[in-house]
Image (cartoon, rainbow, N blue to C red):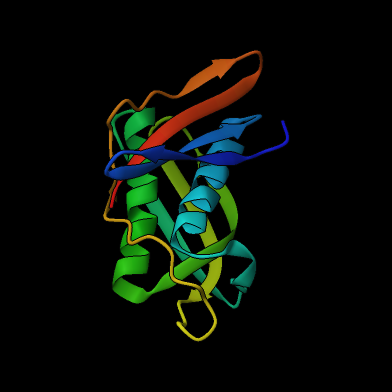
Length: 139
């Protein structure tokens, strides 16, 4: 697989199609796809660490909760992630440390204003040993 994620152009919203050889990579690549919508990833430096812990009743809910927590960190604190270290991932819980920095308009190009990850058409699948998911965001 050449790409970890691709941008989906959806009328009125935006989405990403994410790939990973395991669930950990799928969650990391989903976060990278989200951050790519917000700004150019290569301009983010890993100078600060934020611990993220999310619990959900299902794997779909966990992915949406994970992305919405990252959106919350950006909306509330201006925090943009670059590197992600997942400490624990089950079907119901993710514990991770996200390394990044605060958004700086002098340094970071402003991309889309993402309101939330949604459950719209969300389905995590594993085919031929590769995990994939499409996530639609409200903008």
